[in-house]
Image (cartoon, rainbow, N blue to C red; front, side, top):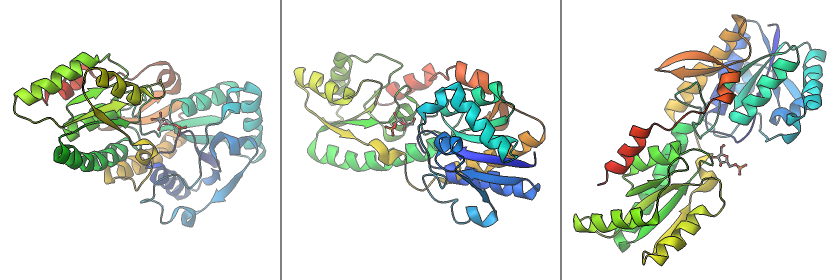
Length: 322
Ligand code: F6P
């Protein structure tokens, strides 16, 4: 390609900045022009983009959020709007687009290339880690560590007061964050959308802990799931079983903050690889990492298949505090 555009879309994730930097620096090295699109697909459809140089991405590798800003653009679900976006790119002689985002953003990228003659490459940018075709997503590691920092503090209070906390972490459709965080913080229980957890099971587990001499305090990590107020509802159900639990919702702190070393390296490698794959003639694929090897997966598969939470891994989270 002679010129490419890059955008970040959907919920921001720590590591988007080093990914942008990886794309820009690798492209410039190959003599390719790069345009940074502001605010995801919303900016693309109105042509809000500027040409980037090496200095445009200086001093961002350690910053959370996204320099290019992001948006959840519902209008992009309309094929006419996608056509308009393709026209914008063609007018500026841009022949490829790199999209960093989650499931919805990668769906938009796939449809854009299917319907219009624009090459696209996707990069998995989401804290949720729920993307098929990659073991890891940009931002997941940082989000897990951010949640752990908070939970370790909550643990001090739980122990001091012998109290029980329900800590809600992000993950509307998936329990990857909750399960990793649960294992790493030594949670007494992990509740995820993929499995049903009965209040009786939680009560039994906590009673058992007391029998084992572990005291009455506890941390239960709950993935937010699709029903708003799920964690508060769970606290109410536990109250009916004579278990008083305090609710602590970590929320958007999990999306921000300086990316971890792991995420900076992952994002930098994937950003540079996206340019390499484009130059090698790839289109309509996401670049991810499987078994520690950078690899491509057709976007069609990425959006049609679900990455499953490994059953044995989830069972381990439950077993480790027994
Ligand atoms: O997809 C990333 C994510 O952080 C989810 O874990 C969460 O459910 C959602 O975004 C929250 O989105 P919003 O910021 O739009 O409320």
